[in-house]
Image (tube, rainbow, N blue to C red; front, side, top):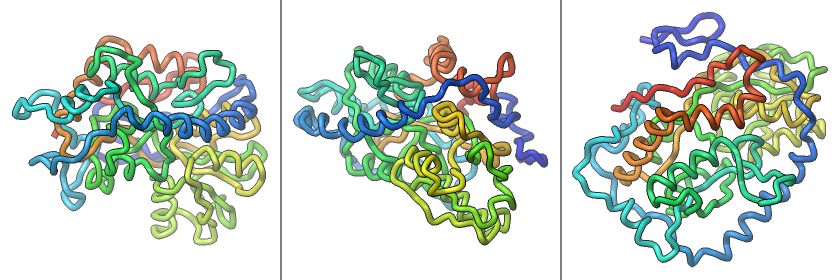
Length: 357
């Protein structure tokens, strides 16, 4: 059974799954406020351009929940370990066949378009293509399924609509810094985890806030609708870990909107995944991470329940992506500059091991 020490670190889990360091100290990173503003504008435009290509084919639809797809929440323990093994199944591939049979033979993927270094539009990139850590993973999945890394239709999906977009068949999958948890595995199927981080507080450098603690008393905190950040804020108040006077009522559809509110002085702090917070600190040198990680978060690829063959294929891709160095190369390119401190690697620099159910 896993236990925690006073710093919130996991013990009893494999070394590669421990979160042993807070993400802090982002000195030397250039200001990215302009990128933040421009990216929001691009994010609004992207869905409009994509709506013109809806005849490309709709995403896979449900064929009923297959036996053993995902566990019920009441039986849930270590939700990140509840995905399906790449091997196994009955050999049928209905979800994959539906993707390959489209007239417009592309994978339809819900992504973020305004998370710096994860999924974003860089206005300085003349190609105008999405880029980032999550985007690299999408290209690899498309390569393995369709033989073409660029056979992807990206759809900008806000944080608040990730599950709905999967359930309604608007997308084949969501690859968008989405945490695997017990409530969500009742609603969508997840791949094995591809990234590990935790929740953290972001606030101005001049703020007296020191973390997820009593210094948030009488402070206004922002989080995204439908995010694990809000769930943790709500749970923190119920447990007494967070002062009752903390105002957690400010929520936004997209997590980056919280950074904008922080910059405008409309809120005192933001709670989000530490990995995303690190990228936001890189965008604005006037803010910084406060305190350490206070939860453990595992990101997974979300797909429709019942699409077991697709889940197994994505897990096969993840295994190969990690084994052949693709994951490491993407981390070094996109996340190393904001998450690692010199020669000291973040705990997130090592991909999580997959333990299938």
